[in-house]
Amino acid sequence: MGSKLKFLFDVEQLLHNLGLTQSQANIVNIIIGIIFILLLAFLSDIISRKILVMGIARMVARTKNIWDDVLLEKKVFKRLSHLAPAIVLWYSAGHVLSHFTIITGIIQKLLSIYMIIVVLMTISAFLKGLNDIFLSLPAAKGRSIKGYTQVIQIIIYSIAFISVISIITGTSPKVLLTGLGAAAAVLMLVFKDTILGFVAGIQLSANDMLRIDDWITMTKYGADGTVMEISLNTVKVRNFDKTITTIPTYTLVSDSFINWRGVKDEDARRFKKHLSIDMKSVKYCTPEMIDRLKHLQPVKDYIEHNSKKAAKNDLQALVLHAGEVTNLTLFRKYTVNILKNHPGINQKLPMMIRQLQPAETGLPLEITAFCKGTDALVLEELQSDLFDHLIAVLTEFELAVFQYSTTFR
Image 1 (cartoon, rainbow, N blue to C red):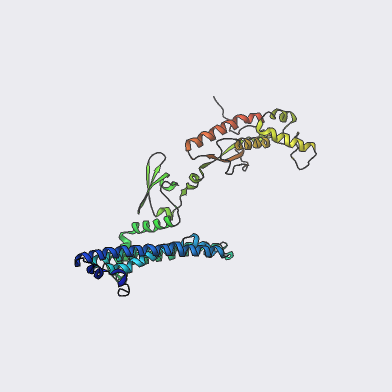
Image 2: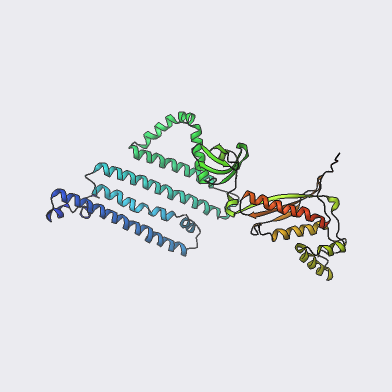
């Protein structure tokens, strides 16, 4: 390799013939060689990344296969293209800096580590793409190979780690494996929490289970707040009462916790509360009651719409006259319209009003909706105002909230 490429890098004799001294010619020759290999690496990067990868992208766009689209989306080819300039620099540096063996060795070691990382990232992207390809197959219904791909990733990461240590120390990988095998029992005993935390950290990161600034709740450890720090052994959570809870990292994998990231991403927060309606107050609406309730805008359109259906003798409609519609039905329609027109309610997310199982404490009417924003004070204010209004308006529908009778002396 060196003799074949000598004419590309070695112009020392030519410079010496032009009148430069031997030392000057040597220095200029090295500088020219460095510039040349950098240009060569740059050109190889352009060829591999912008020509070959773009060519592959055009070919993929023309095919009807799914697998090549997935691999392109996961940037498998793009990551692989980063090897080209590294390989050029690795081979060229040994010739240009042949007189500087120490520097050449350091550069080649760094480039070797870089190439290992590139290969590692490429294989990782390929495995993620393989998982997505499998999920697109009809046979994948109800099945998953994610666990298997994660095991392969762990093995590959381990091999890469050993290879990097071997390059840095100049020790054979076999020697490292032998030494690690002998010390494994001691390491497992002494660094048990650290090893568990390390493995848990990989799982948390690989599955995107936890990030800095995530809002999590873990009742077992009294944690309910924002993640401040994720370290090898612990995760620090700043609770909403400004206290700080420290959780072992591995427990976030072995135990369950709630991550409220979806709430922050949607910029909305759900509330779910219920009113216990006294079942004795539920009754059919009389014509007089319906006439009186027409002035309430949230049920006005509903009453008029169903009155027209009643006039057409639509047997499938809710006929609004005595004995057909209950006051509880109208109250539910009223509540639905209140939610749909409330400026603080997120209309893009689902809202629901439903009856729960009647019990000795009355008929629970559950109201579920999402408020805009995630601020706890805004949420509490909104639902308090809403339920204050609903409790007060119950008397208009001749309904009552269930409560145990209390005797005062």
